[in-house]
Image 1 (cartoon, one colour):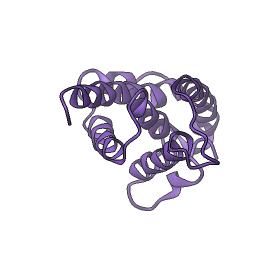
Image 2 (cartoon, one colour; image 1 turned 135 degrees about the horizontal axis):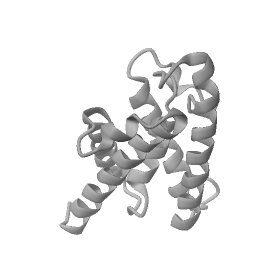
Image 3 (spheres, helix red, strand yellow; image 1 turned 180 degrees about the horizontal axis):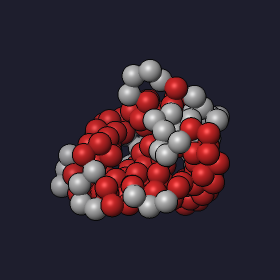
Image 4 (cartoon, one colour; image 1 turned 90 degrees about the vertical axis):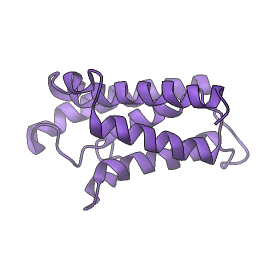
Amino acid sequence: MVTTTFGAGYSPIAPGTAGAIVACGLYVLFMGKIIGGYQMSQLHFLTLTFLVTGAGIVSTNYMEKDWGKDPSKVVVDELVGMWITLLFVPFSWKYILVGLILFRFFDIAKPLFIRRLEKLPGGIGVMMDDVLAGIYANTLLQTFIHFGL
């Protein structure tokens, strides 16, 4: 369940995008006052992101033994990368959509050292390239917000 992000990794079309979309849905649940009017704090969301990153590294190391190196059904890295994209961003459907587009661009194109991180061993390599893609996407999204997107 962790490595496939609740089964999103089994999507026959674009499993990485499916994982990122599930990440957006979970973000809406946590940050959008959907569950009983509760909104998770940014600090709690950051903590959750760190915890899921660690769980993703461990679970991916375990699953690579059966599934091979960085299999497409492992999308916990997209979950984490998307959450990093949305960290400290005001809750808005527009920002979620723009963040999704930016994250998927950086995740697929892998510019600016992202591809190098992918070469790290095991679950660390699987997770860290998406962590950096999320950092780049978040930085660009924060810039857009600052200048009035």
